[in-house]
Image 1 (spheres, rainbow, N blue to C red):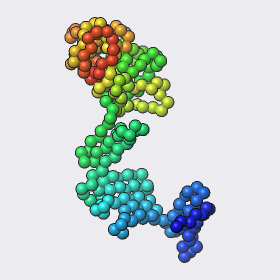
Image 2 (spheres, helix red, strand yellow):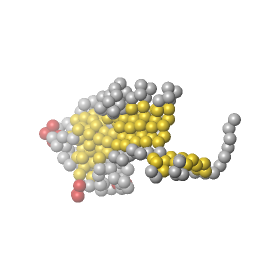
Image 3 (cartoon, rainbow, N blue to C red):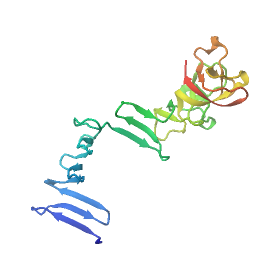
Length: 254
């Protein structure tokens, strides 16, 4: 049997201070009052508090079945602790941030100390000479004022990287990421990325060094070692024998 009500329910202490208030109109629950801070404790079936919101110390704590504090948020210092931060053991913490597809995009592993990212490259935002003229996979070189543009010549030592986001790879880390960036594509400086290549200058095999080509925005096999130094973009991770297309590469500027 349940009862329904609407409006506001309040409870006062011995000094007639309102220490509990529930407003059903806005679904707001208030605990505590001036001189009488509020606490909220949620107990498990063993009677022990499993979740404790401490209004006086501005703390939120959560304990596990073994009574070990595994989450603590200190609002006064904006500090969030995950895992047995108060001397317990056997309950290392993990923090996973999921995307709309249900996949963990960022994983902080408390057991190993690893930061695991689902993305494949380390990229950075740059100003582009022609933001509308580039696309994911394009090979870029450094132009006037440090702005980047599509490559247009072979063995260009101004090579800077590849526009990230082509194929199945996405950036894992984006440096200098600014709100309201003029273009949506960061530039991969290291790691795996799909790159536009042109095999018209020679078939590309796995492990071949790649450099800029005369085909705008495309890489080619670096077949001349004397010219490749300083103009190498990276290494091919797959073969491409004719025409142009997208190939996974390992970006390693040298």
